[in-house]
Structure formats: structure tokens, C-alpha cells
Amino acid sequence: MKKLSLLAAGLGLAFSAGQAAAWSQPTHKNIVKDALAFMNSANASAEMRRAYQFYVGAAGSEARAGEILGQAAYDVDDFKDTRLGGWWVGYEYAPVWNAAASLVNYTSYWHFINMGRQGDSHGNDRGGYDYRYHKVDGGISDVDWYAMVYLYNRGLKTEDYNSTEAHYRQGSRSNWDEHYGDFQVAAFQPIDNLAKYWFDQFKAAPSLQTIGFALHATGDVAQPHHTWITSANGHSSWEGWVDDHYASEQLNNPVAVANLVSQYDARKPVRDLLTQTAQVAYQHPEPLYDSSYDTRLRVAKELIPQSIALTVSVLTKGANHFYGQGGL
Image (cartoon, rainbow, N blue to C red; front, top):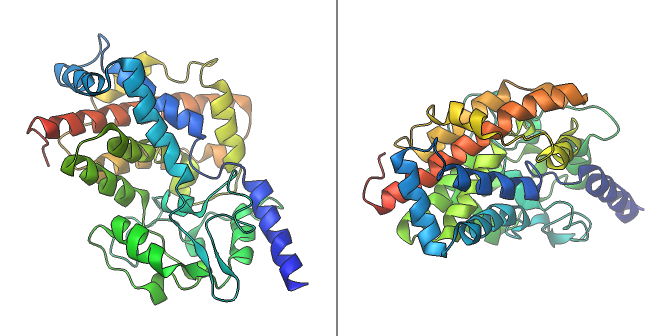
């Protein structure tokens, strides 16, 4: 009976969650491709156009560069680098013994940044996903509650703590017993640390794939659910709506991007750039409680251009580093 209860909870999590990562994977890819195209537009600075030539030259064409960068940003949601469980149930990287991997992977728990609290128990300026501080839904589709029940007292596999978590620690303090022994009190590292790790990998050995992995974060931080810490509250419905209307409603309006891009300084640290966008997203909690078409359209028309502008800045910063002008 206990196993059946866990299975039911897991199925509730899986089928309620849909894509629990920020934006849908196609939206991540579109944002990156639109950012690259903008960098060769009349509104791009000389620095941006040089960065455009860097990536296009490496790939052979804009289409190829956009595909590689965009696919890398897309792929981060599919990483199988985060297993939760215990000796009594085994470990899995997705709910229901990995059967729900096509819907959501536990790697998504590294894809949040809590803009409602200062600091976390690791010593980061902003924390990541922590069930204790999530935005409560309270409804029948409260994915966070399903996850907590299903994963209660399950911890992060030690090998993943020593690899994935260590990569995303970025100088902060971690202790397995304190931070990852029991899911209901686990404190995951924030997504700006993930971005910093992959950006540093790019700096050490430049490739379109490594900076593309970092660009997953430039999409995530512009999604309000990921700054309010919730997998519920209409999370997957909002992401699906944005994906469905991305082209038809011209959410990637280049004029809107041009009006925002000068607000981002590529000389700033990557984490500061991401936090700048996350603060804007946090100021738009409307998609958490209002699913009306007009509200979704208004918010998406602000946040998608913010995400594209941020992506332009990070791509420019990456190329600048290659040319010895990386800034901070």
C-alpha cells in the first residue's frame, strides 16, 4: 500500500507538472536564436556585432550557431545529473522510477532563484529552490506539495552532491546532512551559480555548447515562477501559453529588445546580470494567479524581450572575454 501511495503521489507530480522547468524548451531555443539575430541588426552595437561574428564564424553560419547555442540551452532541462532517493527506495533522476523523465527531471531544482529572500544557508546572496520558502499554491494541482510528499526524507545522491552540487556551489558553503539529506528541508543552489559554472567552463575552453548551457539561465530568470519559487501556481500552463504564442504575438519584438539592451552592461559579473533580470520577473507575479489572455500577453511582451536582451549581454560578454576584454 505504501508503494502504491508513493506511485500515486509520483503520478500526481508527473502529470500535474508538465514542463516544470522555466519556459518550455522550444522557448529557450527561440530566445537564444533571437538574441543572436539581434546582435547582427541595425540596433546592435559594434561590440555586439563583433560577438555575432565570433559565434557565427565558429559555427560557419548564423543558422548553425543559433542551432548549437539554442540546443545547448534547451538540453539543460534534460540533464540526468541530479538523483534523489535513499537506500530503502533507490535513487532516480525523475519521478516514478524515471518514468516521468519526458515531463520533468530533478535537475530542474537547480533552476530557481529566490528573489523574495535575502541570502540562504549556503551563504549565497539569493537562494535557490527550497520547499520551506516556496510560493504556496494550495490547490489540487499543487505540484510542490506532491513533490514534497513523494520525496519526503529522500536526499541527493552522494555522487551528485560531489559533482553537480559541487559545480554549482561556486564558493558557497555546503553540507550534505544540512542541505540535502531530506528533500522537505533541502536548499538547492540558485540558478545564477549554474550559469557562472558553465560560463567559467566556456572561459576555460571556449565552445558554443558550454556558453549555450549558461544561456539556459538567461531564460529561466525571466520566468516569474522561478523567482517566486514554485512549480505550481499555473507554472506549466503559463509556459505552454508563451510557447504557443511566441511567434503569433511577436513576443520577441526586436524594437522592445532594442529599448532594453542598453540597460545591460556586459562588463558586469554574469550573476549580477542574471539577478537584474530576475528582479524584473519578480515584479511580475501576475502569471501565478491570473491566466487571462490579456494579462499573459502583457507580461510576456515585457519579459521575453528582457530575456533576449540579457542573452545578448551574456553572449557579448563571452566573446569579449575571448578577445581579452572580459570585464569583471
